[in-house]
Image 1 (tube, rainbow, N blue to C red):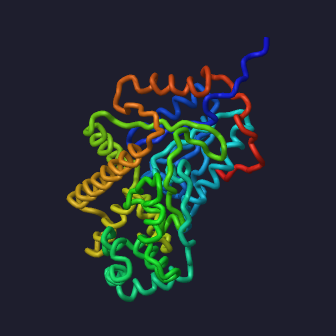
Image 2 (tube, rainbow, N blue to C red; image 1 turned 180 degrees about the vertical axis):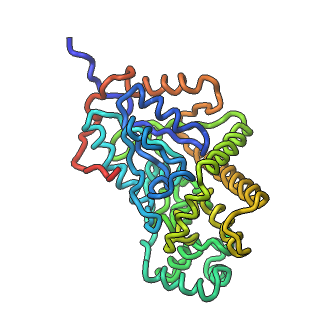
Length: 377
């Protein structure tokens, strides 16, 4: 008798959650039981040379299971949500065609929203115009450009700090290119039927040029016609993440995060104007080293290091809070209690319901795989 080769309940699974929420450990546990390839959903992991502060999977982990969308950009190079969606739409059928399961893992919620809700087009990036704006900022300072933005787009300016170079630059770029405020363009889709508001702290602009999540969330997520399921790791205890974030950061300092940032600074072509260097941990370390250098010192004092740790921890906690806010706005998610003692067996049970018994090879995709080639991994 031939084995049952009925279509799977899901062609792919996504595992999302806040930073320090246990995603990596669960993903590797799944990979030990099913033939998976992991697709990173993390805007920091795309950058080469940024390993410690991003908790990038090490060589041993990547040898155990194939990983994609890691180390695909230099820190000088942007990587947009639109590029991410393009790459994932190519990877999913390619992984299925190899007889393996795609497992998307990460915490960049803008990427998840773009995948599931689609993208609403904003004006594309204008490199020449952006360069002119950045030259003005060097001459006049970002607070002066923030004041200019307040005159032409007060709604956007009100939610941006005077030194938020990326978002101020993008908003002015849109205004100068189109004559329309960025907030007005965003309002067109936010106020359309079924729109779901995006988190203003993570807009699809600047480092994510030309895109915002579109105003819809499907009851059953699909990507390129392939059905899937979003598993959301959400702690029941609000205080559970705090000591985990603290321990994670302490481990990063011990592993050499400050030295990694020093190496990036030594290149001479990087700075906090780049999205890569504004990642949590890197930004705070860069600023601390700037302050020490201004005082004529190469190393941080113990007090400065303690202050750096607290600033980075506070920024990480705020990031985790925003991640959970995004997740809770996604009605199609399957919630898993990240802090439950039995989160592993509960997760594996959901995976088995989606993909069949552990170790089983996936049947043919539920739709033709198409001809897309996999993105570089």
